[in-house]
Amino acid sequence: MDTGEQLVTISAVLLGAVMTHVTNYMLERSRNRHELLTRWDDKKLDAYEGYVDRVRAGIFLAVQLYEDKEGIRESHKQESEMLAEMYEAGRLRGRAFERVMLLGGDEVVEAGHRLNAAANKVDWQATGRESGTLAEWRAKHRAAFEAINQFHDAARVDLGVQGNVTGESHPERDLLLPPAQRSSDKPPSDEQGPSSGGSPRDASDPGASTG
Image (tube, rainbow, N blue to C red; front, side, top):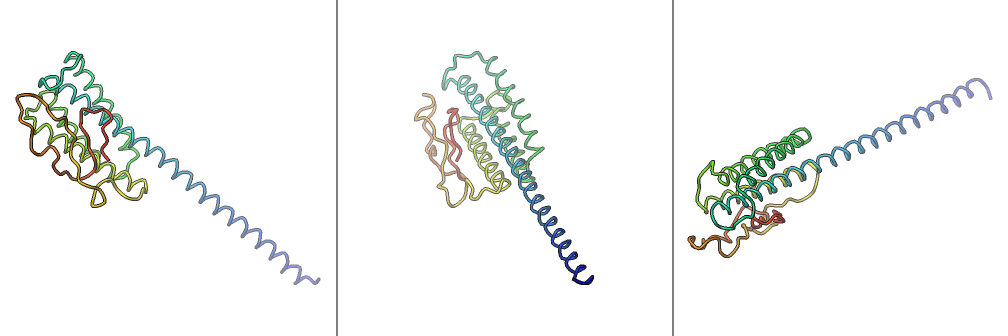
C-alpha cells in the first residue's frame, strides 16, 4: 500500500471516528434535554395540582363558615376557629401560587390570577367583608369553579396534554346543590342551569369534582 492509499485509509478512519463522536454527542444531548423537560413537567404538575388543591380547600372552609353564619348548616366549630382556618388556607394558597408563578407558562399564570380573584370573592362573602344574597353566593361559586376549569385547560396545554375539560366535547353542568338550603328560601329554579363547562359539584362537599 503506497503513501496515498495509507492517507486515504487513515482519513476514512478519522472521519468515521469523528462522525461517531458527533452522533453520540447529539443523542446524549437530546436524551438530557428530554430528561430535563420531563423533570420540569413533573415539577409543574405537582405545582398545578397543589395549587388547585389549596384553592378547593379554601372554598370548602368558606362554605363551612358561610353556612354556619347563615343558619344553613350548623358547624361544631366556633366562628373564630373557622376564620383562623380560612386565613391559614389563604396563606397556603398564596404559597402554592408562588410555585405556579415560578414554574408555569404565561397562560397558566394568568389563569391562576383569575382563579385567585374568583376565590377571594367567595372568601369575602363568607367572612362578611362583602355582602350578598344566597343567589349571589352561588354565582360566586359558579365563577370560582369555572375559573378552576379554565386553569385546568391552561395547565393541560402547558404540559402538552391533549384535550380539555371544557368546550363542546363536555356537557354543560352546574353546581349540584342540596334539595333544601333553609326554610326561609324558596328553592331557586336554576339549580341545574347551564354553566360554561366542567362538572363542579356542591361546594360544601370536600370531595367535589370540577371536571
